[in-house]
Amino acid sequence: MRSSSGYSSFVLAQKFFLHYFQSKTIYKAHSPFLFDYFSEIIHPSKTKQIKEVETLRKDLLCDHTILDVQDFGAGSRVLKKGKRKISDIAKSALMPPKFASLYAQTALFLNARTILELGTSFGLTTSYLAKINHTANVYSIEADPSIYRQSQKNFKVLKAKNIKGFNGLFEKYVPDVLGQLDAIDFAIIDGNHTYKATMRNFNLMVSKISYKGAIVIDDIHWSSEMSQAWNQIIQDQRVRLSINFFYSGIVFFNTDLSKEDVKIFY
Ligand SMILES: C[S@@+](CC[C@H](N)C(=O)[O-])C[C@H]1O[C@@H](n2cnc3c(N)ncnc32)[C@H](O)[C@@H]1O
Image 1 (spheres, rainbow, N blue to C red):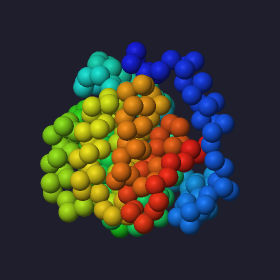
Image 2 (cartoon, helix red, strand yellow):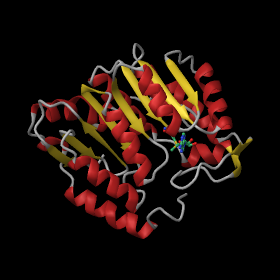
Image 3 (cartoon, protein in one colour):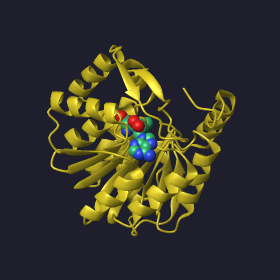
Image 4 (tube, helix red, strand yellow):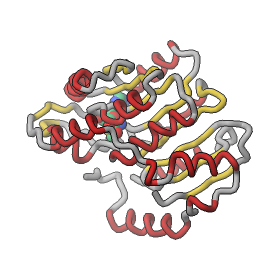
């Protein structure tokens, strides 16, 4: 479900076909980094689903308990003020297993020690990050109190111990959490999909990103504001390599890499 600020299904389909025809195949990687990343991580046969997380996802999809969800303003893909079923939120708000796994494995590929996620929701992507990177510290921020409480329950069920959750707005907690950390190695921006908030959160995180770090931006084709933010991010000179997977994209900061932008159909 998309709010009025998101692209219509027709525009999204047009953009998707364009992306498909412009995509590079995984066999056409030229740089050694991309070649390794493609062959070790991106290939669909490498996708690792975590059984217990996927069992929990199935349970949430069948859980019709009503949560009182707050409204944090424009750009929140999921939050419509009022009563929402857990099953509806689980259906519409969470990163699919393929991408949760892809990004958690990317963090492992980069040997990430410190990971920050903006937008915990029920904590399923957080759990992928924490379980696949079990020696890393995973920090995650979620504004909605009832969604946050559900994520905490889920972390207990999944025995995911290397996660520290924060209940509050990115506007307050992103600077607070970054202020407590020396550096971050991997981050996911998955909430508050406005141009202004995305650029603000991105710039704050870049100020702490480690030399070989990477940042994922979700919903880059959700609206014209998100397309604008993504286009600006990939042109940023601090970004060396960007990979556009259509629904989300990842940018790498390793200065050993030459500037490159790649589209992948995944
Ligand atoms: C798309 S969901 C996150 C999904 C999650 N990363 C996953 O894949 O499982 C986005 C979440 O961001 C939260 N959110 C939106 N705007 C926020 C803000 N300004 N501060 C904190 N959390 C916010 C919403 O409450 C929502 O639960």
